[in-house]
Amino acid sequence: MITLDRLPEPVPHMQFALGDHHTLGGTSAGKVLHLADRGADVVLHALIGHDDDGLRVAAALRAANVPVEAYHSERTERHANLMTPTGDRVSLYLATPSSPTAADLERIEAALGEAEVAVVDLSELGAALVERRREGAAGTPIWTDLHDYDGASAFHEPFLRAADVVFMNDDGTDDPWGLMQRCLDRGPRLAVCTRGAEGAIALSAKGERAAVPAVPVEVVDTNGAGDAFFAGFLAASLGGAGLEECLAAGARQATVALASEHLHPAVAAAPAHGR
Image (cartoon, rainbow, N blue to C red; front, side, top):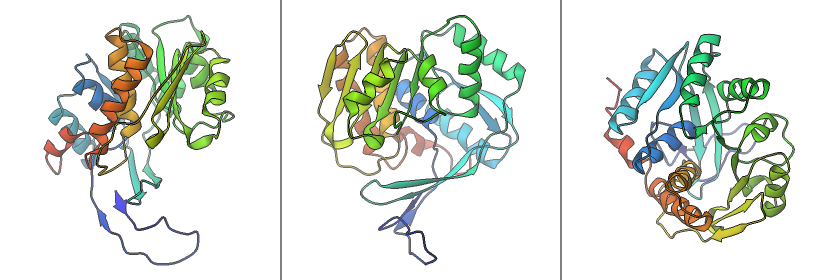
């Protein structure tokens, strides 16, 4: 994580960072940390390398009491995030996991088949899982986070069509209600859109609409707020809450991430080098 006073312009130049630190990242990690925080019976299935970065990831998740089923990867995913104090971000992939094996996919599918909800994130692993779902019979309901979906991305399409519930933010649209409706037209029963300081909205396939304002909080770091919102919403839904109550639970959980320099405050308890 590198904090700058402004994002770099696309020309050769030099900038001085306002600060930097290493921390656990990734959308799946963000979701599982906050689901565990809300008391959900959750397990993270992930490709993690047997390297120093993988040790740090495992240590951070252990410190947060998150159960992990790790599958072998030649390397652990790493990002460098360029951030501004106002929350603007450029995320650079430094390393991506190796491809999952057929045996790994079969093990994960078996585990998902026993779950009440399968959260499948945008990744090569996730794409393989939704493709296998498309070719087979219906199974555990899939919830997926489309992030800054613009309504047209071909990469997002298989995830969208496989999902029971989809989340997104409004970065890619000036018509979030219209975007959610276009998502529902592809098959999901519910679409949720986070709007930063404007709060969050939801639209069901039956036409039910709901909206909540953002919960005031002193923002330390914006990374992971959407994942925290997702987790708060899902945990409330599993508890039988209504649509507006789920949105409100998501908005409250988002403040936990926003008030920490980590995806969740529990990450700060992890050993610095993961040993």
